[in-house]
Length: 255
Image (cartoon, rainbow, N blue to C red):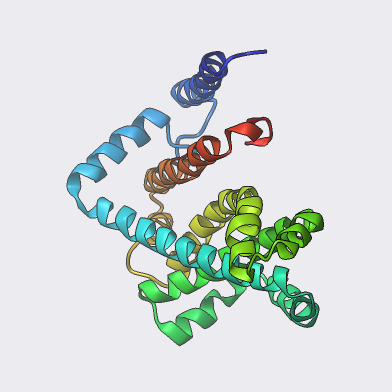
């Protein structure tokens, strides 16, 4: 079995090969630089944009929207998930409506959120919450239903209160499911932020990419995508690292 160092080295070689072939392809004319800007040019432009200061404002706006919407979506989804997981009758009543809402593509609701809340920060956060919320809700419900009922019955026979059952049995048991939902939800949060910024915004990486595309600035589009890639890497692998630290006993099923 390969160790982590070997795996990381292979991953870096793959990245170097892809971007190296891309760069060489644009130099020898096999790849049209008007459609696929060479990586070195994108990197230089990214450094220049970062030094200019304005670009960092776009990065900061997308980061704030993503983190705030993600956090609120996680809190709301976990809270309702635990409530529905503990109350079978309430879950049976509400689940059809929740599934119906879950089936509506949230980006299709973005124009409505803009009409309700304007083009500022709040409408983007609402869109992100709507994406993350239902993912965490579903994961928490599945996690609670996977708990061995014998554990809860044993706790009840020993006189444990409902709050003790939640804090000592349900939450620890469902935490791996919560982190699995969070790792999926953080990607959706970034998608929600970018979609909201493209539809109606004056800040953010989505707005920057859209404006670059409107000007025919292909390199600017790739610069925005590169920044999104870095942001996604930091957030996703930050959660992955935390997941491994907290649940090292199940590393074999992590991403």
